[in-house]
Image (cartoon, rainbow, N blue to C red; front, side, top):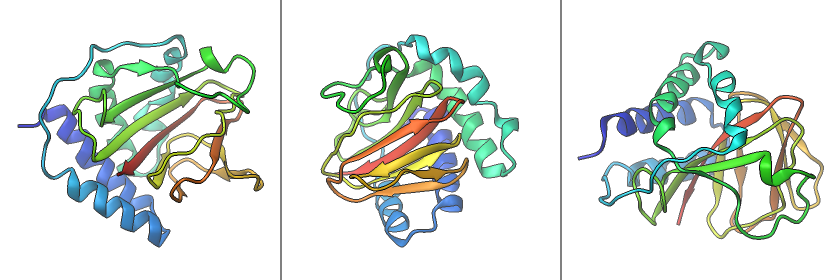
Length: 195
């Protein structure tokens, strides 16, 4: 059986993603992700841990900051699981990252390796950037859909930066180089990938 708080988050995330996603590729990926998640996986997860940048979480996860009920619900559910998450720094190359990136970002896996539900077929996680921070260029084989919970900028390859508003999604195809950056406010974004 899946932990109730995690199930509530997954249900809320599915609803929020479904409400916000408009791109057919995003919709197709999300259907595969959440269909796979209908069957819980077994396993243990690491102890929870927070990094200094997590000091922004109380303000940036306030459900009342969102007009859409789907976004308010996903933030309420996220607050229910966040204390159990293992927040960590990006591993690997930090090419293109802003100065001070190491102490100004954190990632946490919700479902996937080192997540609350360890599994290798689906990854659902969250990234947090402090104000005015650029995440490094990176790539991964699975396609990905972000659900942006606070405004930020996203880029693929050497294209221009695209501003993504709160409550919008952003799709990355397989293996494309991509990056994100915060504005003068912290950036919080959920991401969903399927192997």
